[in-house]
Length: 172
Image (cartoon, rainbow, N blue to C red; front, side):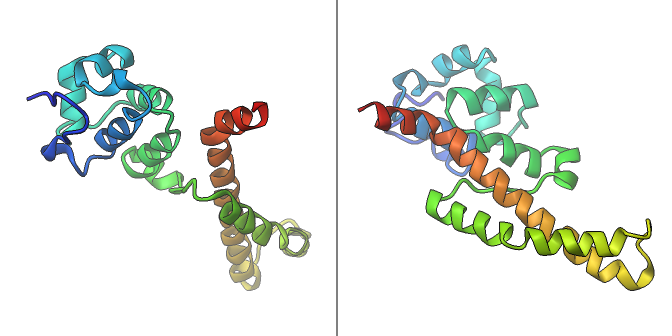
């Protein structure tokens, strides 16, 4: 049964991230309070949206892209890729668009090691190979680079999510 108002949560969908995203987005956009209107905006069938929000169907990538755009929640894409997509589960790390000050500190913390990491990479790869004795150091460098990548992606996602509000604050 379709919920009449987003103020009354659909109990069967309470833990579903796509329902939660729509529920929160409906606080800013009343057109998202009903599945019928939301499905129209997303250009997908209302029954399909219902099945996605009830956890009975996995959304297609293009549906997640539409939801992320309409709900103004870019992290839905990362959540989908890192948790639901077969390829993404192997290649995409979950990221969080936390508070800006925390993200900047994480970024600065990893970027301070960049010169050291560069020197380690040059030392390890200067002969064109990574030998057995360098493997542990190389794995450590790769782990550090992955941390940096996640920090950068998190900062970029925060910026994408909050760009409009930053521009609006500067304009006032």
